[in-house]
Amino acid sequence: MPDIPVGSQIFDLVFHPTHSTVYTGLLNGKVKAFRYDEQGQHEESFVLRPSKRSCRCLDTSEDGSHLWATGKAKAIFTIDTATGTIIETRKNAHDSPVNRIKRLMPQMLGTGDDDGVIKLWDPRKSNPIRGYTHHYDFISDFLWLDDKKQLITTSGDGTLSVIDVRGKKPEPVAQSEDQEDELLSIVAIRSGSKVVVGTQTGILSVFNRSRGWGDCVDRVPGHPQSIDALCTLPSSYPSSHSTILTGSSDGLLRAVQLFPTKLLGVVADHGSFPIERIAVDLGGEGRWVGSAGHDDTLKMTDLRAIFEDEEGEEAVDESEIVQASDIDPQEPDGAVVETQAHPEGTAAVIEASDSDEDVQDSHSPREKKRKSKSSKNALAVRSKKARNQIDADPSFFQGL
Image (cartoon, rainbow, N blue to C red):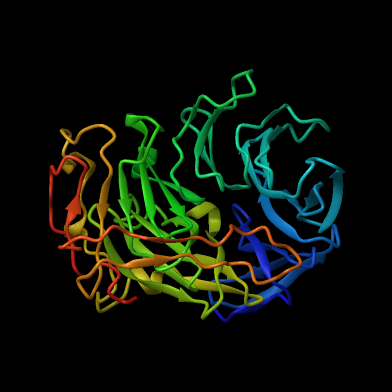
C-alpha cells in the first residue's frame, strides 16, 4: 500500500476492531481517520482537532463506535467514529500530559501520564475509579492480561508494575526491581505466559509470569537503538506464539523470533526517522501492519507479502520453532540469560538515540548510552551460574 501522508508527525495509531479504518493522533492536535481496502487504496474518512496541543494516544471501544483521544491537553476526548464528532470531553483528567490510554474492559479505561500517575476510568462517569502513584517517571506502555484482570505497566523509571483492577487498594500487586534502563514497550507471547519488554538500550527483556515479576529471566541484545514499539503477529501464522514485530529508533520495523532468537527480516523502513508506534489491523488478526515514525507518513505493510513469500525465502521455518515444553524446566529461578549475537563476532556496543526531534513536545525518553559486557565468545548464552550454555544462531541481526 502506498504511504499515507498525514501532514504532521504521528504520535499514535489505532485500527477499528472490525472495519478497515485506521485512526492517527498527530503532533498538531488533529485526529485523522482513513479507510482502506484489500487492494491498498485509501481515502480520508474524517479530520477533527480536539485540541491545539498534540494528540499522543488513541484507543477504540470494543465495537469501534467510540474513539478516545488524549495527550498534552490533559483531557480525554470521546469521538463518535460514525460521524467524526466529539461527543464528550473530560477536562483536566490528569495534572500532567497523558502518554498512554488503553481500553481494558467494555466499561473501563486506563490512562498514564508523564509523572507516572495511572488512573482507571468508567466511560459512563466523569471521575476516575482510582489512581496509582507508585511510578515516578512517565508511563510508556500498557498490557492487559484478561485472564487475571491485570494491567501491566512499563515506565521510564526502569520498573514494571502489575495492577489488579478488581482490587480496592491504590497500589500494585507486584512491581519489578529497577532494571537500570527505561522500559518503553511491552507485549505478551506464548499465550500470555511470557512478556517481552523493549528498552532504551535496545535490549528485549523477557519476563516469565510463572516466576513472578521481580526480574526478567532472559535478555536479548541486538537492536542498535531503543525499542519504542512492540506488536504481536496474527495468530494465523505458525510462528505467532514466539515472533514479534519491533519498532526501533533506527527507523526499521523488524520481525524477530524468540526461542530460538532469530531475525526473520525487515518489514518496513522509515529511513532515519524513529518508529513510535506499530499495530496490526482487525484487532491484531488482519493482514496490514501500520507503522508511524517522525516522517509525517503512515506506512501500511502487507504481512502476507513478508511471511507468505511464494519462494519461501522470507517465510517462517516451522522446524526452527521451539515449543514451550522444550525449555529446560531446571533453569534456576531468577537466572538472567543474555543472548549476544553480532555479525563480526565481537561484543556489540548498544547506544540509545533520542527519538524525539520536535522541541514542541519532548515526551520521549532521555538519551542513555550503555555498553554490553564483553565476552570472548559473543555468540554464546551466559548465565549467572554458568549453566545451560548453548550456541546462538550467528545470523541473528546479521542485516544490521
